Amino acid sequence: MSCSRRQLITRMGALIAISGAAGQIVAKTLNINGVRYGMIHDESLCIGCTACMDACREVNKVPEGVSRLTIIRSEPIGEFPDVKYRFFRHSCQHCDAAPCVEVCPTGASYRDAANGIVDVNPDLCVGCQYCIAACPYRVRFIHPESKTADKCDFCRKTNLRQGKLPACVESCPTKALTFGNLDDPNSEISRLLQQKATYRFKLALGTKPKVYRIPFKYGEVSQ
Image (cartoon, rainbow, N blue to C red; front, side, top):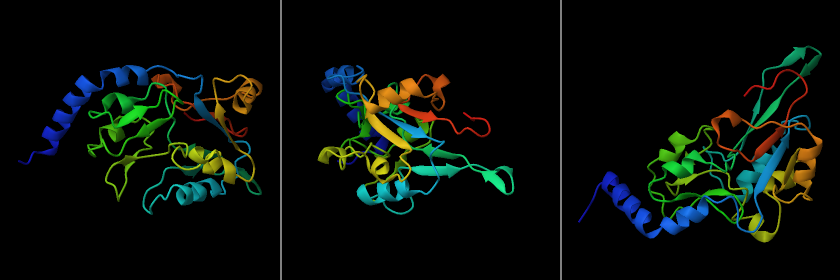
C-alpha cells in the first residue's frame, strides 16, 4: 500500500508525538552535563581567505552546489588605496530556541541536550523542507545525495567525534574562530566573551543563537 508524502509526514508526526514525548521534553532543556557548545567569529581578524569553507567541505564531504559555511564579503569600505572589507560568517547559529526544531513534524531536527548542538537525524527526515522555511538565518539546504536536510553541525560527526576542534577552527590562519563550552566559565570562549564586545545576528528574534561575533571595527554592524 502506498501513501503520499503528506500522509507519511502526518503518520510519523503522530508517532513521534506519542512515543517521543519524553525525548522532546529533554531536548528543550538547556543542557545535561553543563556542556553547551558555541563559537565566536572575530570579524576584526577574519581576512576572507575561505580556508574555513574549504576545510568544512573536505572534512564533512559536502558535495558541490551546496555549502554548510559561507564567508560573505561586504562592499568596499573606504577609498582607494585605503580600502577594507568586512567578512561575515553565514552558517547555522545552533540556537537554544531553534525554530527549525519546533516545526519539524518527524523529530528529525533536534537540539542535543547533551551539548546544545542543533542537528538533523537523516533517518527521520522526509525532506519536507519545513525547517528550511522556518530558519531565519537561511542556512539549511537539502543534501543532493541523501535528499534530507543538512547544515553545519560543528563537525559533530567528524572532528568532534575524534576529539578535535571543528574543521573551520583548525584551518583558520588568523585564529578568527574560537569554539568551546559556553557554560564553562574557564573555557577560552567564555573568557573571550568577558573580554570583548560581541553581537549576535538577529538576536531580537528570540532564537538565542550561540554564534557570537566580534564586530569589524570599520563601518557599522548590520543585523
